[in-house]
Image (cartoon, rainbow, N blue to C red; front, side, top):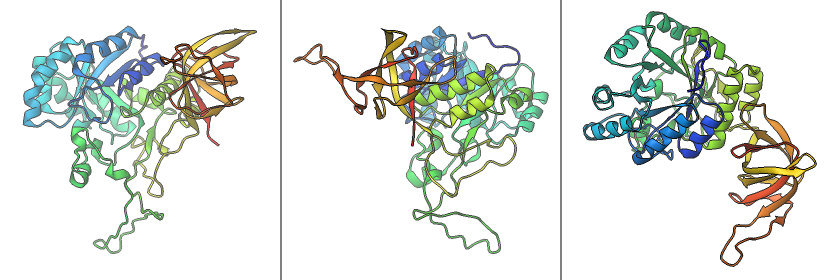
Length: 415
């Protein structure tokens, strides 16, 4: 596993599928968490088939990262009946830990996955040392702090909880307006249980509100032509406060986002890895402004979490332009890049490269060419010089002045 100093917490990244897993470990995650197609709370993610888990775990281990599997959905009787065989398969896959919230699932995991550590999900709402101690006595090696805890709350729990019990805390990503994500709105309003991994995100919908039952109480609500977004929680971003969490005793810093794509995972992991390795936190904050996000805040860590009732949607400073798949010398210090187009870019554009271990840097596109796919009529089609790369998921070649590598990402600033 990656070398961790006594003062550097683990960086834990989401992996909604294989591409996200590879991006997370390449860009510096110390551990990844993912799920199969059952029992996880992100059923819209690509996830992994149970038969693919040994390969997914091996991919993480080959990069020096640990692999944690989410088994944190609300469990009914049929779920519990299916768990023993499922847990035994995860044990055989050499997973490092299971993330569990249901007490029955926890009990079964102790019996049917005896070689795997058990982490208590944030869904369990652990907010005090007594709860942490009880989970530890039951066999937990780690608890994930409830999302509503402040830095001071975590420090107090760390001081009073068993020393060998690890603490994990979220540092980045979407926030749920419900207590630690235990929401009933989605089930009631859309017939999709968020506690079983099928959240329809009704807290992000627009509403027209009339409040008649609390006269004299003031509820500031901003409204546009579509309605209001009174439950629209801001995203969490703690990249400028990692020292506070480390000082409070947090052992693992967790990034939310198993529904996100590989470009997002790579970009966020890259920003946090850079800061943990000594880069200026302001650099990390600037990097995180580039990815799609709701307005950032520090969640509950320094006071009540904030909402954005006046707006819907995301903000971002950059678009994902391309994925680098090859790079070779082109002479005179230049490099010829092959990349898969994700968003439109043009001859002469200044793109920004996101590569592991270094600050993002600019590359100018020169000699842009489309690379047609081979077919039966033309098994070796010639490159076609173009002014614009605008065929999504198609390959293009171009020359740059900086060396890139397969797995790097390119972005372009939005107007």
